[in-house]
Image (cartoon, rainbow, N blue to C red):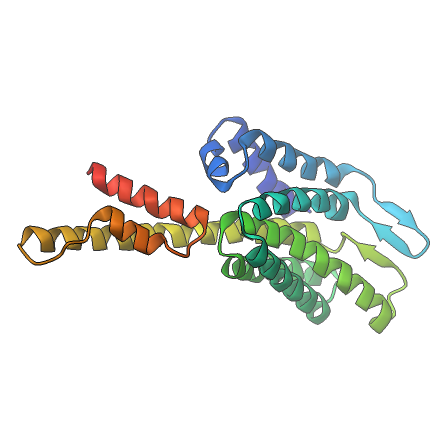
Length: 247
């Protein structure tokens, strides 16, 4: 859980000093709520696991992430992103299951390989499926949990694992990497869209100034571009048009 704790620690520090407050507000989560969710994930790591006969469940790798993912999913549904978020969860769960079954979890090396594969591939797929920051975050967390539970049951049934382990074998690192990488992808795509649309607007202005018959206002163009995008993406584009107008 080292990688996941480092990433969460960095986020907690940034939030505490206000460096990431605007980002998470734009994400749809208040900074104080995000800080509490991150703190809950960190605390969950140090809580002892729950053991039973042929059964192990970790607090940090399953219970706390499940609570956090449910809260984030509720926000995603409120933002009207239920369908794409559900698709993202299914995609992330499928990739988690696939990498777990292919790579396995017999050694430290295979656990690390599975965590990185699930994290990077799953995070990218979660963003492409969910299409928004909030949906990506929900998909990465909930999808990893769902895939982990299914893989634990299959490993017991198909490969004869004596103990069902839920929330172990690096799944905590995998979900934090997936969530972080998915959000990074969302920011990269948003930045590219802003740059492309700023360039198009400037070209339209130049054509208008040259006397060509171009009667497309920035607001009309923005409406056309924002159509059928998520609220988060629409806000990115709106910010781009606003910035261009100030220039």
